[in-house]
Length: 369
Image 1 (cartoon, helix red, strand yellow):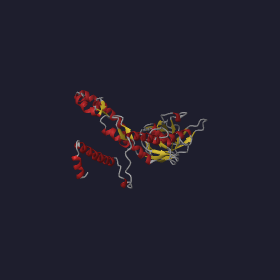
Image 2 (tube, rainbow, N blue to C red):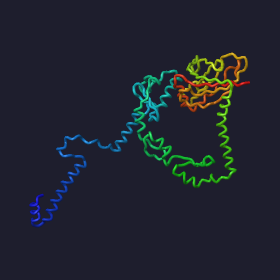
Image 3 (tube, one colour):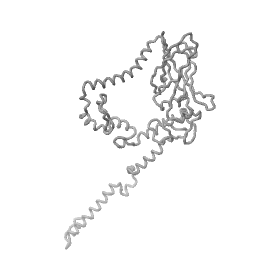
Image 4 (tube, rainbow, N blue to C red):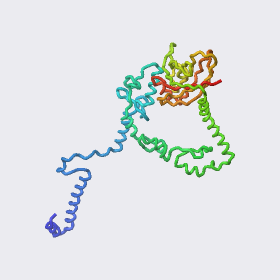
């Protein structure tokens, strides 16, 4: 507005101040309009040739729907849950978590059938299927809820949060070893330890608790002491054994495993194994076990007293607890009873059943007379 116009407004009779206010309002509105255009990203027509700005952030409601769609796309086709570790895919791209994949292979071995994808029925095996690293990475970044504090975290960091960081995680009193049964949220632990009565126990009470702890420790050390004693024997032999799957000739065939003949301590041996003690339909059972027996094939002049144990092979990841067995072999008694293979649980058993062959290591210690 020019100075002359300002003079005219000021000289206007009756309501000159109103005219000044009206003019100022028009300028303010115009300026606000320009500012608003800049804030929302609207540029003058002269700048319309510039590239568009980046996309705005997706609203939370739409983001939630996107996560739900990803859950349905990336879930395992067998258990319909998001994989927690490795992800395998069939030749047509259908996804399976590691647990379900191994379970399908184990079931097919028990049924003497070819394992197939539950979606497209194409053949699956450890050679035909491969891991999908992209899906594993995507799943690890999806949010999930902490079971203690109910907050959302990426799956890749949830385990660390629940183990070390969450203030609501369940913990135990540091005096548990001397009998305190308390357990509760981590943030309540300092208050409990300040009031815990176990640090003030008498010497007699503590000696009783320590006695129970010593008994448990002695049971754990007994196995290791036995192994160390066996290593002092004069005649020790070991070999890698390979259990191969076979079928019985019964009307309803049953799966069993047997190794080729092998030589240890100048004697010929064979190992046999069976699933769930030759149960009729082990594929219908959730709990699965393997039991084995050691058979002496050579002829001996006198009784051959031995100790033996099976451990995992050098290239397998199955967890087996060492258990020592003792037996006196003779020409009339050359087969041990079936004893359980000391695997930790049914998941480890499925790993063995899913493999083409079971590879273990056998140790035999000959007892000197």
